[in-house]
Image (cartoon, rainbow, N blue to C red):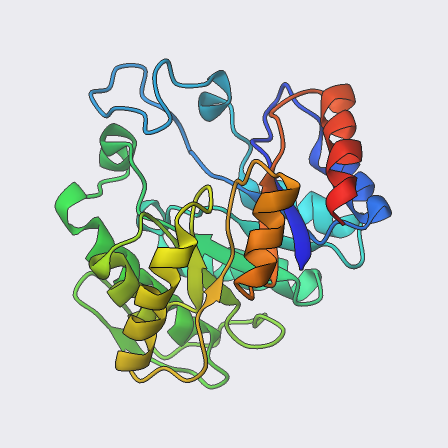
Length: 274
């Protein structure tokens, strides 16, 4: 099972180039980064991790620029987002960012996406909260059109693009797309409709939920099985053994949002799971 990591990188933490080198040197499989463009100082949206909202949420580095720096100093380390708030992006620009990062990294990128929790943040991007799920699906479809081998038009409910010359392309076609969110029929239906798998935050309850996801996948006519990558996991030997027994091939461990010394101590501790 591949052991990857995630961290809230900020202007107060270890830098992405330093972290990426240390991850690859120790044999970790990947680095996934979260995204928040900003956190409105006044909000009614409750933080799902509890209040007060951790300091790092309002200081998060842009994940694509940080991952570009990580790609430049590594050769094997997989790169990903966990998660990209697709509804808050112009999809034509986002498709270009993703394709460029994937191309320059040699096809190492995974696009983790989600719908978000912060109503006020989304509103500042012009997102209507009640339609953010449909908007995300529409924008993913538009990006897939831009990543297609031949110029391909897309006309959706929320946006359109002409058949276009759009290079570079992701190195191996559209990158792997994993959808984050809480288990349930709605989310599993969306994963089966347009994603490659699921990023279950924390990785709890998978014994019960995996069969439900796999059934939704099969009923949608998708071949094989969905990719499932437990995300932001606080590891223990028993927990990782359980994931292996479930047949999972990758897990993403949560690193502290901290300066170099604390992050590197945590990496040395996590190395026991490699």
